[in-house]
Image (cartoon, rainbow, N blue to C red):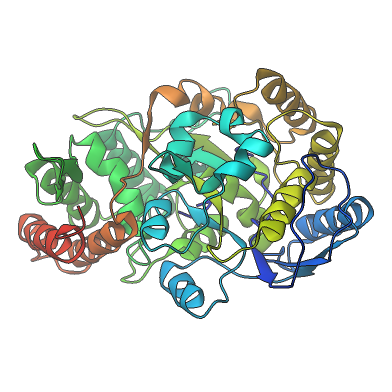
Length: 469
């Protein structure tokens, strides 16, 4: 989803999407990164950082300058786009799909199945990505042994803590650290304390744009649910209506009607948590840690008022959803355009090995963020495999870290042992299906979690899974 990195906690620059203007180009015979002398290649770059993100904008201006010097035949044209499956399918049909774009971990299989993305295996091998990135992550964008995407970043959802409200509610220890929930039962009780002591809701739970279902996965897994599973024939089936999922949705129902601790709104999306959290209107929310920058950039929240801790455990286990972002390329991209895209990845520091350019690019980014007082913290889930690259990058992040790490340490410790990947089959559709159930239990006291999920499971099975296995 949003932050949905090689994973740059708190800090990754605005994601890029490269949109190509098709030009007549001769085929490159070069196998290195030296400047090409062939026909010009024009690449439109979006999402170019938004104008409000001054640190990212300054970094991209530097990248553009370097690109012009090293690859003068490649022209970058800034363009701001955002990913939407429906929008991108329409663009693909009209031949206007960006040459390289970013998409969530949930999407590669759908895009591959719809024949709208390019097989980039040869270029990934040429530039060292096949061996240079984690196999378990690259497998998300692999089909029949061919690769269709390069991992930009990965994250594990955390529970964000609003330290201002926790202090007002007396939920800090003698060292000034938050007394946070280790289990979902404790989350309900702590949320109740926040509401009683401050008058503000203790917990934010979204219910639209797929964000509610995305967050709900953490709760469902904690209650032992499998929202998708494969039967004995290998077909994917819906587990949305399972008894464990019903218990998880009953928990959500109780947060509203038993404890009265959730934000009272029938339409809450991703941006709404940022507004509510940054303005001290809610105590806790699930979030990917890179979103911390949005709190500071958009609402000038004090970065020291934010803590990130592990997602709580439940009777079914202790998990945190792992998501992330891939770069993928349009199926109609020319070889020259694909090569130009990989060269841009080099300039922005997205390379499997530690190079001088990679180091300089990360420095540009981190220095710009520190100068703007944007939060910078250490790396967590790393998509790379080269230990020297990981070490060099971590040292850079350690040097520029400007947050109180005591407020984040528990989130990092043991993170890899908790992560679970998002489901492979129509996951965004599943999230939106779950949104409807969450919205119903939060707005209708007479709603039945079991009836809602039974109906939703049938709909998801019939509309998404039937005939697509």
